[in-house]
Amino acid sequence: MVDKRLFLPAPWVQDAERCRAAGVPQAEIRAQSTAELGLAMLAPARAAGHLQGQWVAGDDAYGMVPRLRDALDEAHWRYVLDVPQTTPVFTQPSAVAVPPWSGRGPKPTVPRLAPDAAPAQSVAQVAAALAAPAWREVTVAEGAQGPRPYAFVARRVWESRDGPPGRACWLLLRRNLDGSEPRYYLSNAPEDTPLQTLAQVAAARWTIETEFETAKGEVGLDEYEVRSWPGWHHHITLALLANAFLLTAQQAWGEKAAPDHAAPDQSRAARPLAPAHLDPGRSLALVDHHPRAQRAGQALPYQTASAPAA
Image 1 (spheres, rainbow, N blue to C red):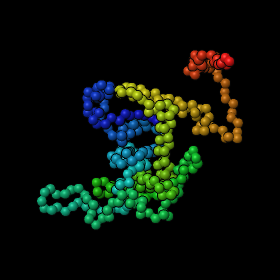
Image 2 (image 1 turned 30 degrees about the vertical axis):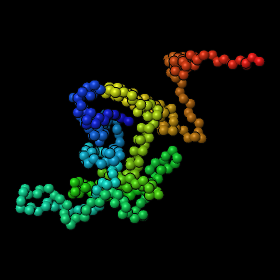
Image 3 (image 1 turned 135 degrees about the vertical axis):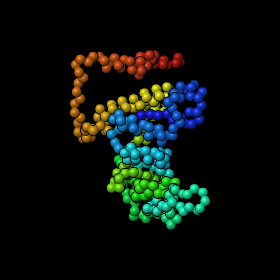
């Protein structure tokens, strides 16, 4: 997690009095979709060195926006984005032509799909037309309960842009091994990209969502009971900082996510002692000030109930 943005619906942004009461900096904020906010966070994070990868994944709220896909492509990001099942694509090159002039009105200049060209199909229709042998089982990751295999197909298609075909891209199709829960993705990955790579990038969003759930449970990421712009940003900033600290501590202390984690049948290396110049009583002082220790000190002495008189 590298950045944050608060989504404000257009009626909110257009209500000057409401924004003023909540402390929203009106001169800097305009109505933006979640796709625009996501894109606005990528470039600064990359420039600051916080993002070393080159892939972008997202659900269909992002993938359904052609402007977002275009912007990612222009910025040299590779993406695998969910799209709705109704998304139209062309499965083969289709001819376009400028319609003939009827003799009245302005002459047409915008190319349209040629009358004899094959029409676009929805991604769901493309998936339904595939024979069973076209699907390949791919294990995308090792989950808490073992490998996570799905059935995948990748096909080169052409985007449909207001009717005519657009640029070539990958259509990635996924479903459970029993054929249930189909998912559809578009990707601008190079033509020689392996199916395994596309499948693993698409599945990476599950890891991201899991991290969100962990942050909600461990540091209260979603427990912001505030009604102001500064209050929300204060809470989210501290929650993200706490989450980053916990992740760093987990790796430094040799949990399973740490690269130097010893095998279960091997003993751990001895940990170095604290530097001599540190206060040897500091750890005890921290314990003394820990809320649990304070509560224990404030508790009344335990008393054994006396037996009732006969």
